[in-house]
Length: 111
Length: 112
Image (cartoon, chains in turn cyan, purple):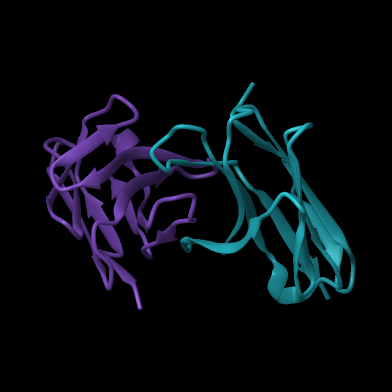
């Protein structure tokens, strides 16, 4: 089983749609969780951290289920500018702060 | 504020030539530093990380090496490039303790 697995995508949605990304991780000792966004041919940028109680930042909501080792990202009222690849990222347990990245899910929001 | 600089942005090198990519961080001290590679259509692969000057950990066997001669400088090198070394090379730093990474703008390397 891969350390971090994401929906393979790609996702094509119309503007205004709600889209959900799912991610699972294999190391139960993982400590921290993040969602990153990567635009085409650019570096990944931190979108949001994921907290155990779930957290929201505007149109973005992240959830963590430690028992199921599952992370999600929900985007509401999607915009054209949300088009990007979304990367699920996990800080592996006992790892000297090494982040493990999922392969990413490409989202295209269409007008 | 902290900034990370990485250069060059693009590089085309012949097979068998040497490589040196440099990354520097400003506005912080004793950062954790990382080199990642992203091959076309693939995920990010951790190559090296460093928690201090002269301390380098390698994640995968390959013909690349890394060095950290100064606290905020991280260098990725190769003596002889292979075609398979082509990819998008990203330097990143973190403050540790579960914080996320901040990436440099990357170097797109094409080995021909």
